[in-house]
Every structure is written in structure tokens, then in C-alpha cells.
Image 1 (cartoon, rainbow, N blue to C red):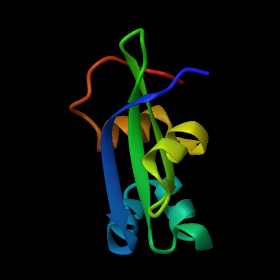
Image 2 (image 1 turned 90 degrees about the horizontal axis):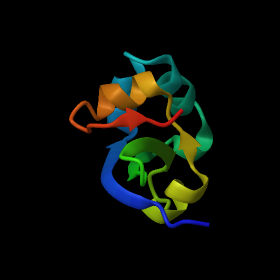
Image 3 (image 1 turned 180 degrees about the vertical axis):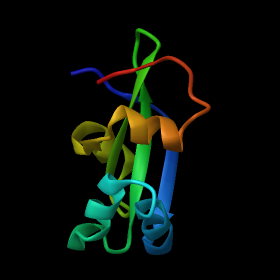
Image 4 (image 1 turned 180 degrees about the horizontal axis):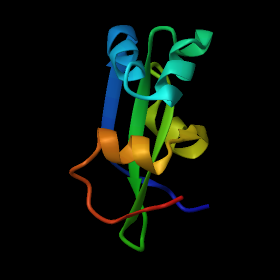
Length: 91
């Protein structure tokens, strides 16, 4: 298994997650789950083909663990949170 290169990271506390939830239904769902009550951590991983993907997990989970087993963000949410990252978003 290839190691994923983490190039960006975003941590939202409960208040930040609640604010994002006002704009995105996926965030609203996560804000209501007990394991995400204190916040979330989102990591961006670059691929070898200059593509990228973003994964999300609880705020206290290690970034590498989120990259390996976190929930993948949809393209809309990923581009909303990381508009500065270039390349094709891996679906």
C-alpha cells in the first residue's frame, strides 16, 4: 500500500463545524454524530498523477490515520474548503 502524502490539514472545532454545517448538508450530518461532537480534522492527500483527495475524521485522530481510513469528502465540499489546491479531484 502506498503512503499518502498529506499536503494540507484543516481542523474545525465544534463551533467551526457548526458554522460549516450551515452551508453544507454533509457537515450538518457530521455535526450531529457523537464522535465528531468536539470537531473534525480534514487532510488533503496528493496523488502521484497530480490529483488529490480530502479525508475527514474526528479532530483528535492522527492525520495519517485519517488519510488511511477517514471518510472521503465529495468534490463540492473539498473544493469549497480547499479552493487553492490545483489538480484533478479523485472521486
